[in-house]
Length: 485
Ligand code: UDP
Image (cartoon, rainbow, N blue to C red; front, side, top):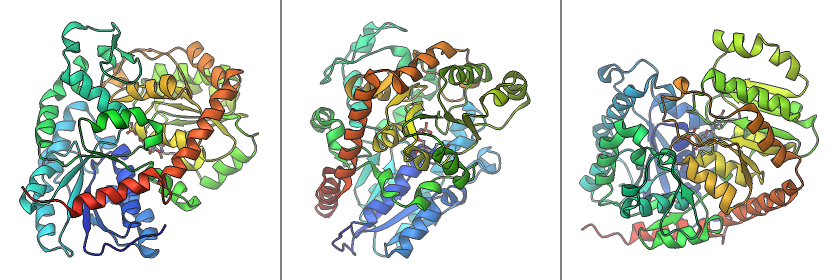
């Protein structure tokens, strides 16, 4: 990628320590460095491991990238050893401790920024790290927010929050999100945490987050303009915004794709060999993200739905084989029955590598924003099963606006840390039907063509002259012209 040197400009990136926020920020660090910037990304040792191989390769290719690591005071904050990422937090009530531990990085980061060369020009920090606003203020530099989501979500949230619509709705009664370019209906129990009664315990935190956004210069969004043009246009009326994605496309070598995140729980070559044995667009890839902890009985329904669909599949079961799991699913002979056409991955899958294989023809996803974008970049239609956060918005974008997906019929968000105790909400029959509609139904072909077109548009956006490339130049200009108030 051509780049004009901005040696004097130094962007400091501070990600939230959760895979869905850390991985795109790692990618973003590389993309920004490709524009000739000095970029420092700050995290903790166990998180650094997840992005270091990619960063090291980028450094070897001549980019000015720095990965700085600080230790979290885990014991002091009542957290177990190794609990450096949201995917390792053992219980919902410990998320507070986790955010508290993160905020203790403020002083070490400030000490680093006092002496680092070149002097930092701006901070791009996750919206969930309100203490980073204070660092930007002290150093008199702009702070840009990163939220790991789309303009569709940002605009929906903004319009709901600034209208009185929630005053007159309750529970599972659908209401129209006001002021959107499309007619989007949602329910109270599907809304993201800060507006959802099931996440009342996080209200205070969200308030603090919101207050810290007052002085921010705008939002850097991992999306691209052609994906959601009307939503970018509308959101621009209320916030400064730079859509610079999809940043995951910067993983353009097999090694980058295979090594993204923690070490995969499956041998990549074995996985590719397995995929090579299936016809084009025949395999369903099933992954419910890095944080979802689905109840065993619900997993059983998923397993039975996959079995009934008769399609080959890769299923990322994001847990170890527990006794309960063994007795419910495996004891029933499931693994033997599906052995010929199902590959089960217990733990972490090389998702981007799998999605980019031509044999994959459908993605059963929890609609996390990264997974959504990764499915789009791979040009694959999706089977949507939203669970929490902004995932119900993402489902609406995929199914209703982009028309590249089919719902499994989930209707209520179950907050993080409450999922294991939840009841079965999606039945195997619903899963089977949704899979068949995407994989074998006649309308499936049109959907597939639409998905392919979007993938081409995504790639174009990130290339020189594309909208995301151009927006990075605009962001750089914004930093250069910043005047400390
Ligand atoms: N991911 C992966 N392998 C896995 C699970 C997740 O590579 O086994 C990656 C996935 O590619 C995505 C990120 O982890 O980039 C998950 O982010 P997303 O926003 O989709 O969902 P979250 O995990 O935050 O709910």
